[in-house]
Image (cartoon, rainbow, N blue to C red):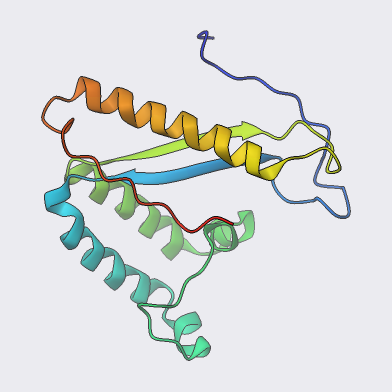
Length: 156
């Protein structure tokens, strides 16, 4: 195990009636070459509209504004039941790699009881680690080091 590996113990489990979601908090994202972002967005929009057409139509929203949380889509049941989801996920990863991008994920195990838990501190800690990893990538990849745009979802 490297010295930068963070190992934490969990004291809140899935059986907890109020806090039964994931015992891990993380941030994930894509790193794409700037020249590929527009094309990737179009490709992804088409795949999303195809894969989730039934839910989008049922919502009555335009596909461009309709969203589904990844944690709702990627459940154990859904991954096991829907071959289309597994196929799309493989295509998604291959597409990112084929255009010179990669996936970034940073996560930590929640260690405090719900009463002592500070979600903003946890978010900040994970975000700082993600930015450090992006910075290391930029330092090693001279071609991309001058052009990094970080886009985040809204966070309260």
